[in-house]
Image (cartoon, rainbow, N blue to C red; front, side, top):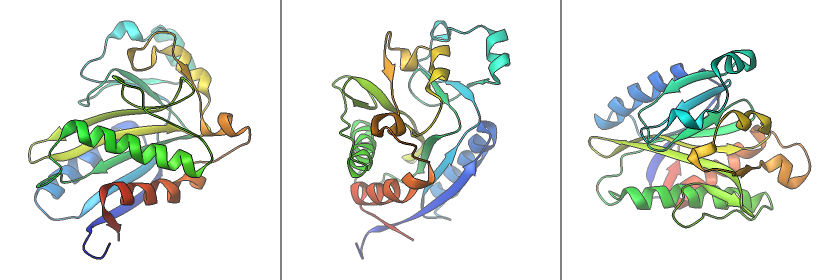
Length: 218
């Protein structure tokens, strides 16, 4: 890994969604200018529903009063994909990578992110897998991780993945997750039958990311 591209991993804790959006925008510009190395932001969000560029508002099944009662914000974002929920106990990863010159393939990038999550789950003793024609990672037909990305000019990535670790899965009842009807969701804690915290996952996902993308954590 001595010749690998440097990767700076940042553990940011609980970050409001709007603040994370602004941070990503700043880092994308700085990465494009070559002022910083590749970044992997690892964080959690307060309760929020985000709508990607392919979203349908019909996939939000809770009305506004119910969302307010639950303390869930609603945000339109510039990533791909449909409706996604984020909340405490869910590990969110935002890679800010320069895919030039040899990784300029959006489909490969998505598959690589899935591989990172499959490796992470494998180290936890969970057999995750992608599903053909869908994005994300699943365990026996239950969705455990969602992926939605944006590729900006210069092949700089932002947005990323969300892995359910110990979050309250009942919040997914407010949406049609990723626009897929009758989908079941699960989490690391649920699959293992014991509490697992986001801090328990950080080192594992960082290592898996560096291995899949050939980066050296700085």
